[in-house]
Amino acid sequence: MTMAYRLSPEADNDIEDIFDYTEFEYGLQKAIEYTTQFHTVFIELSQSLELGRTRDEIKIGLRSRIKNKHVIFYRILKDHIRIVRVLHSRSDIPNFLDKA
Image (cartoon, rainbow, N blue to C red):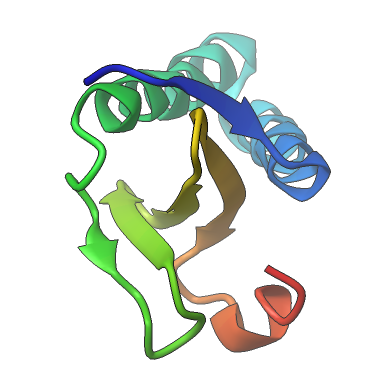
């Protein structure tokens, strides 16, 4: 079953921040390539809903999928998947997901 995916405002900001950092450190082309990979994973998740692992220890109903040095957190909803956050693996994840 394929569903649409939607980014939360926080996840959208996360992607923008990742893009900005990557562009500053590695250049525009690398920033485009790196952030495009996230959208590829979002599509994969929307096609295979349970591809990620459950993260009920953080929040009930939360799932995650690792891509490079980042963790994509998402929820499976009635008619779409919601990308909650895209966080660096070294982030204080429970703090960032406090409102997820």
